[in-house]
Image 1 (spheres, rainbow, N blue to C red):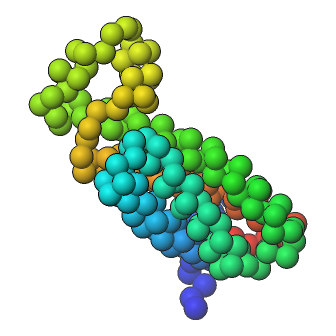
Image 2 (image 1 turned 30 degrees about the horizontal axis):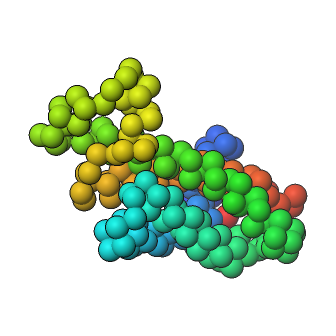
Length: 186
């Protein structure tokens, strides 16, 4: 393998160098499998089973967290798997993921409102039906009575996944699977 990537990454600021590593590529690949799990379960719960779309999103997020941990532990960070116990790594991963999931879910909820308000001819009617001020209109109502966005909910879910990915990688890289002996960013 050429030394060009390592020469290039040595010129990067230390904080972002891990983004240009084979480990990030593995993490992103695992994340992509998590996207498939996430969207498949969102479709199953929301569309096939008729579960409220916000609840469906939260359930889909949790299932993707569990699958991502298992694959990352076995593949992406397997060289650091023995440094702490499985339960400790799983708990750390879940704490990181809870923050990431909260970010993802917030982007999902408000992304749905933004997409609906921008693209739906029914937006004025839905927004006009909301009693109360801005907090009720833009926070509480979208959470407990979201607009029906159809396939747009998948765009909102993908946007949330994208935003949460960077948090998840850096927090897991520097905390969950932190190595006291790691100098490289592989």
